[in-house]
Image 1: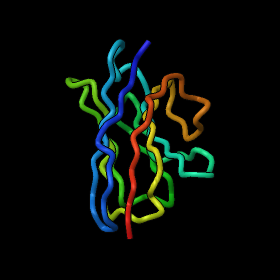
Image 2 (image 1 turned 30 degrees about the horizontal axis):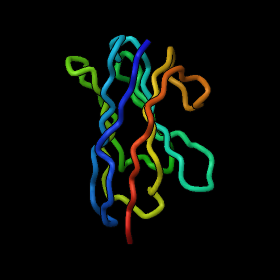
Image 3 (image 1 turned 45 degrees about the vertical axis):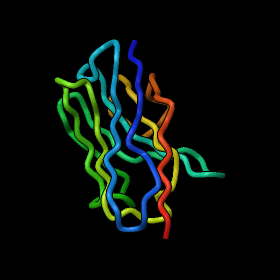
Image 4 (image 1 turned 90 degrees about the vertical axis):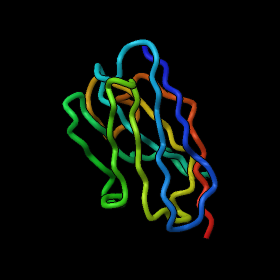
Length: 121
């Protein structure tokens, strides 16, 4: 098993950047594909980015160019760098771990509690 804890969210202005972190305990994150999802108020959870065990990355089409997902296996941590933030990026961001890379949230086994990102205009 693995336990995931997200951090790095907060209140920022449009155009700012944030780096979210997902720290894992238990089994190493290098054993899993890792994903980031987000859920805005009144909306379904949606895919943001994913990284495989071999560091192949994939991003939601609408977010490409503004995001970078990375992992530091020595720190057992996965990151999501978000640039040029927009008010529509406001959501709770969740980190997830699973056996294979996927854009579908049900394919992930372990989830963090989420971190709130609020972008003001």
